Amino acid sequence: MGRARLEIASDAFWRWMNGYREGAELLHPYGSPRISYSGPSPVPNWTKDLAELDRAARAKHGAAFSTISVANRQALVRAALDDLKGERLVNIVSAPHIALGLLAHFYDSSEATDLCYRAQIGRNKCRPLAHNGRKPLPVATL
Image 1 (tube, helix red, strand yellow):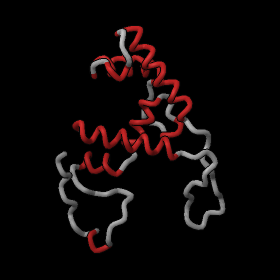
Image 2: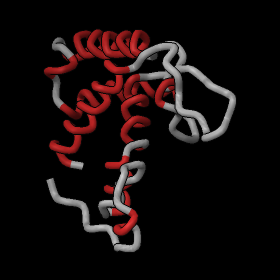
Image 3: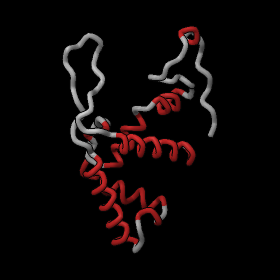
Image 4: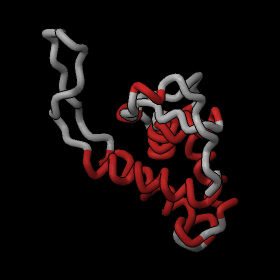
């Protein structure tokens, strides 16, 4: 993905976490009488995950998680996820670890779809109907 796209993805996830509101009305199908609401925020549990990663980094490497090498950070995250094996990514809100929440958020994004197909598809983005018959442009290099 490259550093620039990683920063874009993590910034988008940070904005999503800060904007999450418990009890907010969720989108529902047109004409459906059933209205559902968002549940408890996952952020408090994810904050604990970050604290645990930092504690593990200090115990193993004698430094804060944010200051150790990328390889060491990856190893600590992999170790934290060892017991959370699953067959697919979960819904963002139900992610049992912040790392899985970040992945779920990214893979649910229009940007992830564009990168996957290497084309500017713009899934879930408004675009003129006149453009629907055109082949999407290639993804820009960052």
